[in-house]
Length: 172
Length: 219
Image 1: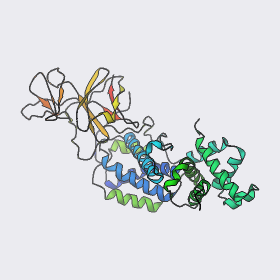
Image 2 (image 1 turned 120 degrees about the horizontal axis):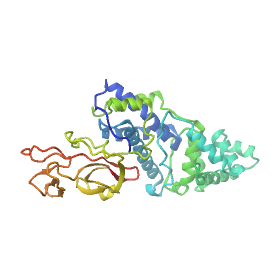
Image 3 (image 1 turned 45 degrees about the vertical axis):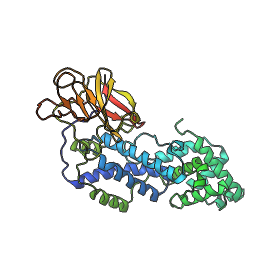
Image 4 (image 1 turned 90 degrees about the horizontal axis):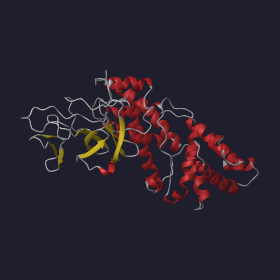
């Protein structure tokens, strides 16, 4: 039988304590969003949207599991809207994987490990260009020099490598 | 930058690697998969992230200015604090725990229906439930009226709390009517007439899954 809301409903000792708990839960939401948008400014905006949307709807009797579940359901919805607005697509068209399990602890290396699993599935050239560009922060020019190619060719290879990476199922 | 896809994607990659926002244009949709992959790689480069102290303070101020409600129970706070939540709830349960602010509180005078070895039964898509209208559903041996309130649902037993008759939903006055005697109940299970001192209907557990399916705890 699934877990049920239980226990007496009582007021928290203070509003400050409630906000601290909320912020701790939102840390997980922030890490989840950051791992998908890759930059702080967008991650902060979207986390704030999640907080504003979700908190007025939480009932006093909500168990912690539901609170986290609802925050992540809201985060998925906010992220879906973000991509659909930015890319001009309906949410149904988006390929973005937003259905991952809810984190159970502090922010982890999940996004790093996931990237490594994807890179391992790519051809040598594709893996190399993405490693140099994203993991080592090389400029296009530096990548071209390292791989004895031209900037134009590396740009095309980068695009093809990203397309190939998007097709890899890191959990497969 | 030209319109070639490699140039468009490079512009976005360059922004990401410099910590800038995603500035996407309509034409970028053709490369949506490459762009979302680039965003994930850019995130991976920076490792696991926590909110900056400045953002955390801003967020705290936002929450402090939110409507004054008790958000969490002490029990929920303890569980959240210990970080043992959510393991079995990867789907993101919305359900009874979450309702629009200001919606009627369910009666506390009747206990919920909690069958031993109960299980959640899919009773249809949320889209099939009309806002505020009662819909009779069956979850094994449990029959209930489910009510939709926005993206959340509530449910009460379909059996009258006085005579063992099954209620029916009367759309006009928006109440559950008993066919066996002249009583009716509101959607939160309370008797609608103060002249009848009947117990409230039993609450039935209901929720909405992350996939937008309505589930009722039945047998």
